[in-house]
Length: 85
Image (cartoon, rainbow, N blue to C red; front, side):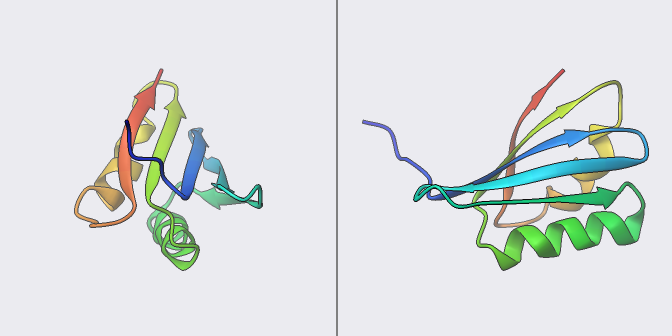
C-alpha cells in the first residue's frame, strides 16, 4: 500500500514564466502563473506553502527547471518529486 498525498502541485516551466496547478484530494484546484525571476519563484514557493502543498512535479524543456529546483531543494515541504522532460 502506498501513501497517498492530500495536496500536490504540477508545474509547467517555461523560460520566462511557469504555470502551476494545485490539486487537492477533495477535488479543489487552484492555478496561477509566476515569473521565472527570483521574486516570482519566491512567490511560487510562498503560494505552495500557503496551500499546504506536499509535493511538486514539474514539466520543463531544457534547463528551465533548475531555478525552481534551487528554490525548493532545501524546503521541508513542498518537495520537488519529478522532472518530466
